[in-house]
Image 1 (cartoon, rainbow, N blue to C red):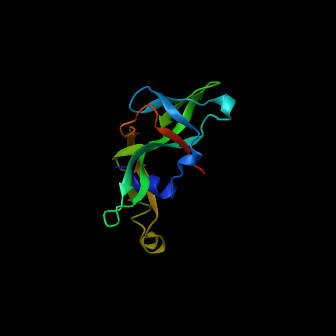
Image 2: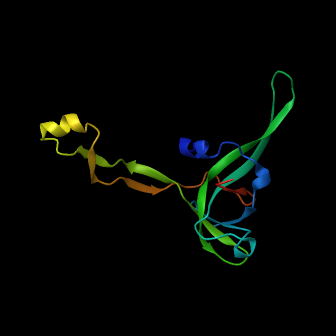
Length: 145
């Protein structure tokens, strides 16, 4: 299950905006796409990786509605060559949330003046989130359409 953040960023998937495809899978976190610097791509640019799923049929009318688009993940260009680029996941899974404490908690004025003022005592611990069942041929769509 992908995070709500991705779904909010990707309001309507239009596969006509695809700029390329996954050409090789390196591991669960990285892949190579069939586009590169010659195609105008730049390091750091962000993309969604999408798989085309089955055609969804309305159970009442038997009408074909649309082809399902499955979001495999979010990635950014890590390295770029003339005709290919390596993408790495840009999502993270939180293993432990940041530990926060109220600023100046002992000062009675701070309790009333800024109830939501916190300082981070220990930062969150995260790890890269792997792609969801990545396949050669999955579509690459720019994140900012």
